[in-house]
Length: 328
Image (cartoon, rainbow, N blue to C red; front, side):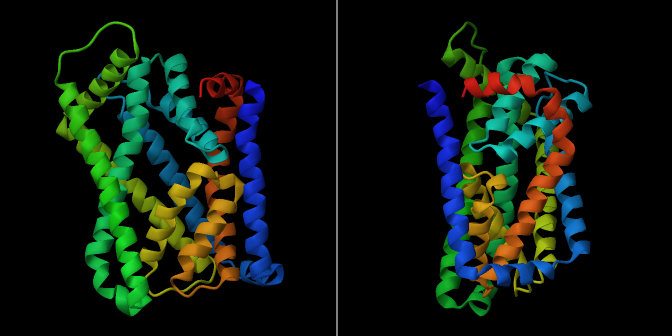
């Protein structure tokens, strides 16, 4: 019974993905998609692949930074663990690779469980904070041009969507930072139990965030990671021969909505990127065939770099993957 319940989720996701892809491809017609895809620029695609790989490496370097100051470990083993976990996140939904990373940090570099959970959470938290700040900047400096670019009705929708995403990311990150910093200054809680473990995790995060130089350095690296994402997905617009009036807004929408879609549909299933590309790029007057060609390129840059850096590390640790998933 347990096996069936675990197999049900990926089965439903696969069926849903196939259904979404069939609907999108039938509407846009295969020959139109193939024609749009055949115009792809390999030079821009190469830029996107390099930027994506750099972003992955920055993310795993930040995992190492997030272990500081109390759990300093050699850099490369932690980065390799991050590469393996990143590939799992690419293949599976619901951030399954994060659980894998926690187990590997415990077993391979002897990081206590609360500190491992804290490091993984901080890596994601500060990335969300950096992306929220970026979205807020897009809203502040780009809102004046939304009407001319999108029309009044769509400009209102874009402003509302970007504003909610920015405020949501900033609000959640700020609350988490304040709680962690407050608990980090409290007396340690010892003993077994879920509450003590959670408190220990938050105290570890608070210790990191309570050091301005360390926290600001981590946030700066997260900003660099966001820049890599923007370069990656921005380069795919000319790669797919797509010309929009405000590419920064288009890329922001694709990244924001795509991050939500990846929770249910991992990038390897392709349906999430396809649906997101068609939905977001339609606001900019891009046809479905070109949007699906762009989605195909996003699949390439989501999967190929993760495979390149993560395949060997994951293969060497594949025996632990089943154990990790059983703990979900």
